[in-house]
Image (cartoon, rainbow, N blue to C red; front, side):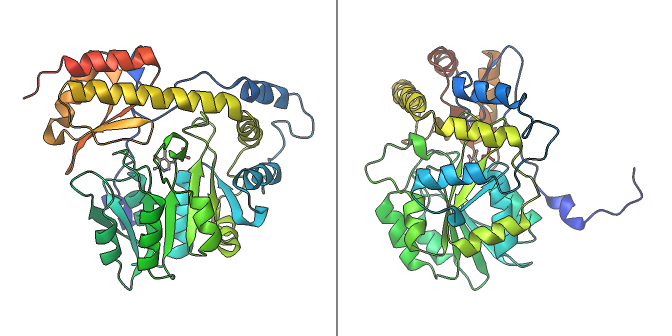
Length: 358
Ligand SMILES: *Cc1c(COP(=O)(O)O)cnc(C)c1O
């Protein structure tokens, strides 16, 4: 037991619960892409080890210039509008740090990404949770109404983790019209590559015309690089500069920088993987609904089972079938199940259809 008094904030800080990894079991708990490492990513990492000027004994480029340029090209913008981070969850925390003084409010739907309340509290801000609609989507009317003089930051997660529901461009634009320009609105698009909605928003395009909007994206999910930690933000140059002021130096390591560029260059292979995920999502949702589960429409690489207080029992049952899913057991609880490879999804469906509901 240390004699050092630690900050009081720690006593009430919720822990981030990662999806469990169980040897021999199928993991459908962290929304990872269930494909082997992209060949170009593997080759790049192996080649990197032999390169004198960028070998592992050297620090990475702190500004990640090549990666930032590649991302700016991808979204059709300039490099002063792009910041990279050690996963987009690190950028979530930086966004609180640059927008909130102690006691300011961070607004988000609930349930949504479980890191939002944690990074808000770490940033000495006050998390404000706005309940989802009965259909498990973000309640934009209630969110706009919840803005106060202390609101500094709003997270709009679309498609929403963990419910999979997505917003349309028209809905996002109407929301932005209703929110004061002084509030920073972050459109968290961690799952945008799986969104097949008719009018799904492009946060980077919206951020191009609204200086209070930031699009947040990651290479962890659709690009299959969760283990390397690369995310990025697109927005006004002043916001991007501020994000770079509070970043931990060298946050994106050299392997991650090079692998990210290789992944971004593998768009054809990736597009085919995304299409396979979407096809499997359609199949899994249909099978679950056939088995009488209530499943909100998902535009992400996971599905949501709003099982409330039965979430823990369902999760246990799946684990007995060697399938690890992600329970959310508190209020508005349910189970989030990632879309895996076809045989993994079959195992999950066998577990789900053999569960005896209470
Ligand atoms: C997974 C996820 C992220 C961040 O992932 P990183 O691995 O940190 O890039 C951000 N937002 C949402 C909603 C997510 O689900």
